Image (cartoon, rainbow, N blue to C red; front, top):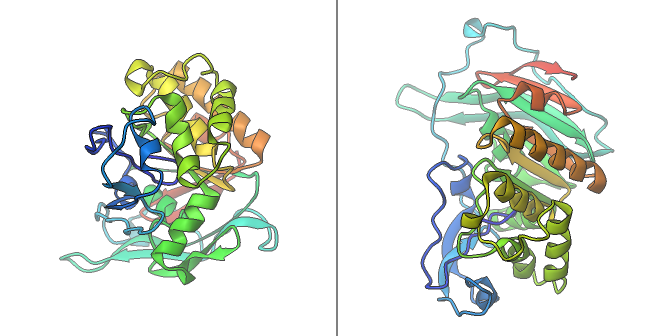
Length: 320
């Protein structure tokens, strides 16, 4: 899985299966289709040919998120905290924003009637800003992340990402926006076992036809402290090292916005803190907007903006 949702086969042409624990956004990032170009570069050592049919990025096709109802219909009477009125906002003016959502709602059908997963959320973020999304499981955090990243479309409202109204784009166009403007970091790393660290970081750039892929990947791995681990495969790296590779890959495309879904969730506290430091350092250096989903309150309060969801509603826009 690459930073724009790319997935490659092994040198034998078999699918590189992700680990058991994956982000709920993963299904929306991959699809199986023909991608004849650059296949020889996606083999286990970038020299062995692979079959033409392989799991492919959502550059051409982008299936929508499979939303599984996990919460009851939103009812303000059941909320322990009062919901903010309608269009609660954080951030700055529309003219300056790199990412904005207006009156965003997500409703899915169920046997018991429609379930409101998200209810009229609005936010605006500048380039270089940081936002933490917190809340209990089932509160709508990952659904909101998917909508902001253009992996799914809202039932109502709109998302403007890097100047593009995602609701006005088809799946191919939204996938292109993600490939050019978005990076992803997942809880379970989502590295390809058949590729070494350097190749994992190179892959999304090579699939975009960048000639400087190897040089830039090497520089990024040096920056995250893995200059001596370039030829190591994920199985030869610790969890913290794997997440460093994933962070390098996420920044490879120089994204406007980086979405991180529980980036320290699979790490011990010490390693998680070091990964958090790295993530925020790179965010500041590259002036990338960071949108972070986490259960870690301490990590969340490192962001300039923080919102809390309960039952799909914004209950408090907090300033750390």
